[in-house]
Amino acid sequence: PGAQTPIVTWANPTPIIYGAALSSNQLNATANVPGSFAYNPTNGTVLNAGTKTLSVIFTPTDTVDYGSVTDTVSLVVLPVPPLLSWANPALITYGTALSSNQLNAIANVPGTNAYFPENGTVLNAGTNTLSVIFTPTDTVDYSSVTDSVSLVVSREPLTVTASNAT
Image (cartoon, rainbow, N blue to C red; front, side):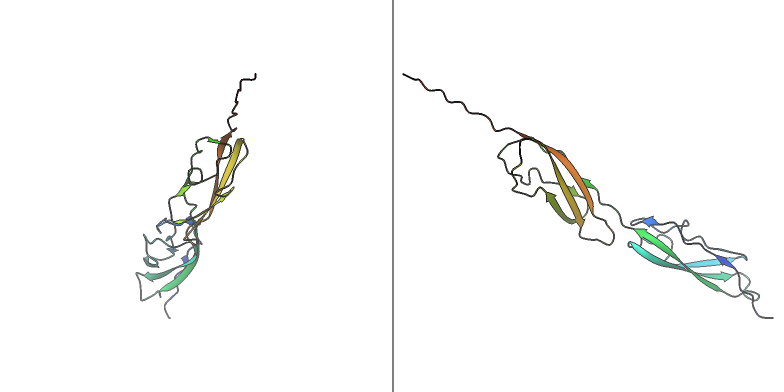
């Protein structure tokens, strides 16, 4: 009789977030006979975001009675939302146009900020909400994020002039 085919069991792993290295949580195939597993990609590999195919070759210890088996699974690697830092800006006076003094959100990865209202806008007095959409340069491994802050615009100071009437 010929070599038997071992039964290899390997379920699609739970999604991981970009930056997480492959580990035994994903590379966890089992077989019904003793042997060794050779994974591709290997333990410790960091994959880009997207749906990836993981493969394994199982080689039984008893190669006389059992043959090798290859199996694959799909792993979803999710993009990471970047960290965005943006503190509430200092109070400004009515008539002051928005500038980089107020529109100064910083992300931990390269990308661009789109602000609303835009640079150069003059806001009404009161508490205003400023918003930003950050789009990373690497849109595969990182997702876009939004944030908002409050900006207080004080009223323009009233100037009173007194004159001597005769």
